[in-house]
Length: 226
Image (cartoon, rainbow, N blue to C red):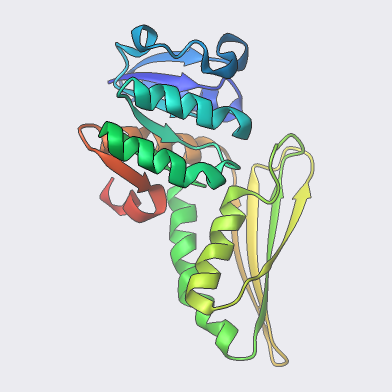
């Protein structure tokens, strides 16, 4: 596949490395080369089979709109833009393109989502709950998209809206904890990312899965099909 990677940060650079290792042809655009999505013309995108976005929240919508207008499938690993999901879903459906986004493309984290969902009934048995997340000091959004997904899962499966405590420190890749507390005991659930490679590998495999498909998808709903 011909893949265009948006973002030259730590994760974007690793996505490009993983994509090349999986024998894809790769181009990379950084923020300075693509202000306000100006570089994403139909002509520039013509040779790309799919676009993978690991940029910043404020850049996602303009990038997505340009790619959708050009009829290109897109994978978005950037978080912090989810208020615009309905708008982009409508565009994708009208354009009949493929779009896949996720708060976390790690297979391990998506297994963790299922573990948390299975644990949510604890909230109906006199347990209180709280979500903690830690990321590197440069992360732009707080709480993280992954923590927001955990809160959504617990709200839907446990019936309660839990608070999120965010920490930004050092070079922490990403740690997420869900803690249930009762008068009798305490339950700790934790996922700790050791590197960004899991995010990168999941994003590239997502682009491969999306090839030839139309529709608006969330990674946690389709990852088992990869």
